[in-house]
Length: 137
Image (cartoon, rainbow, N blue to C red; front, side, top):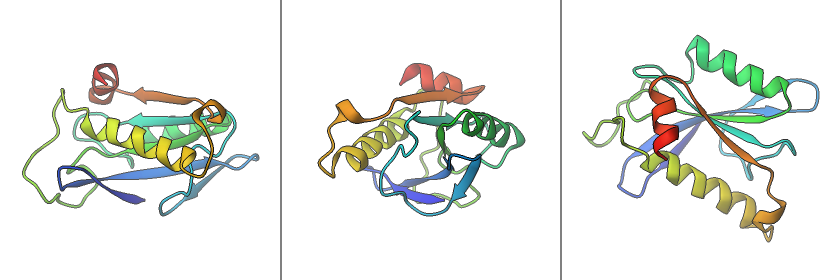
C-alpha cells in the first residue's frame, strides 16, 4: 500500500498487484516505475463505500493479473480505513486523484530517461461509482 500525497494537501491510498510472469504477486510500498508488465497497467476504481479490499475489487485485480497485467487499485479518500486530513469527501464528479495518479505513473516511468512512446498501455477500469469517475476523467 502506498500513501499518495495530493496537491491539495490531502492523500489517498493505492494498492498494487504485479504480474510476475507466473501468476500474480502483491507488492507493498511505492513502485519505482509503473507499469512493470509489458502488457500494461490497469488502474481500478472501486464502488461507493467500498475499497480495494472488497471481494469485487480483489476478483477484478486477480482477473487482470491472470491476463498478464499489473493492477493499481485506488482507494477513494476516506475509504481505506484511515481518516483523511481534510473534510473534503469524494463525490461523483471528483477526478483529481485519478488524474494525479496518472501523472505520477507517467513521471515514474518516463522520469528515468524513458519516453512515453516505450511506455506500456494504461487501462482505466471501475465498477459502480468508480466507473462513473473513470468516464468523467
